[in-house]
Length: 297
Length: 149
Image 1 (cartoon, helix red, strand yellow):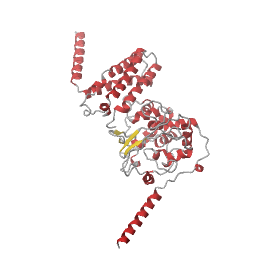
Image 2 (cartoon, each protein chain N blue to C red; image 1 turned 45 degrees about the horizontal axis):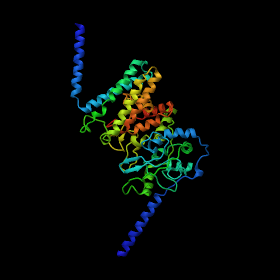
Image 3 (tube, helix red, strand yellow; image 1 turned 180 degrees about the vertical axis):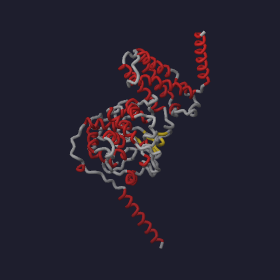
């Protein structure tokens, strides 16, 4: 009898492990899935700023956004993440990656070899970026200086340190859908929506998260506790920005100054270093999109 | 008589101001300095955006306000003022007072550089705003945290 119970439990455990294994299996795209696209380095550079890559990946405590040695510590409720090196250094960076590798990382959350990436890398937003834009970005990243660095690993407690488990998280929160423009919205608003939801990854901080760390998309951009510690990240829907004109928003993204000439701080100071590099038209588009977001309250 | 009344009023206003300042706690003081800085930056920004006519005198005065605001600013963050009065000061200030001081010095240096070579045209306003804005962001990035909104 005891043997039958034990063997029953073993079978159940094996089925559970098998299900876990299957459910968390990485499903990367193949190079043949990529469109035929001639990389545009200048657009890749633009996407680098639109995507705010340097905000996290630039080597800390220096001013050059193209020194992408990584190492910044990102505190979170799940533990401390250490941002990796994305310079073209073949050993410590991503010099060995091809365009498809970057596409898989940014849209599937999978590194070469099938390793799941932690969603501190905002692929739930980056999955909305056009594949052509990612191919261009890779071409640009190949042109920046190679930086050798030795970034320590993430400091995560069990069970968050089990990378394979991220496959389950991705099943729940990564839908793989590209950005779809709203046919009823203007081209300007759709351009802003693309920049905000895709490369700009604004929702990663400005949208609240559930207990599993997934974005609560029905509370899109309504503000949230600061994931990096004390304080809050503000509501940037039309309701939250009621006292801001569209040109106030665009000016803040250009200069860092709010309508009452306070200077944006915290991680938003790093964001402004990127948005200040965008075209005035794109900053206006972001502002128009944010002002178009429905007032939920 | 009218003149005397004016002088008297001015002295009274200044005295009230002085008494109020002395009576203010460090949190209220530093918040007022930041409000002044905001007003000064606003003067430069409105000129840069074309919302206000270029005025060299007003622009250079704004830079002097910012310079003065930086002087002794970090002394308004003594131990015990980490919380209260809606402060948005980050705890990092007290963990790294030297780093915080360096950010304040960066503003002082930027403003002093402009005072030494005063603004004479609209491009000068834009350049000053850029230089000073960098120091605002540079400090707020690490040492200021928003509580709400």
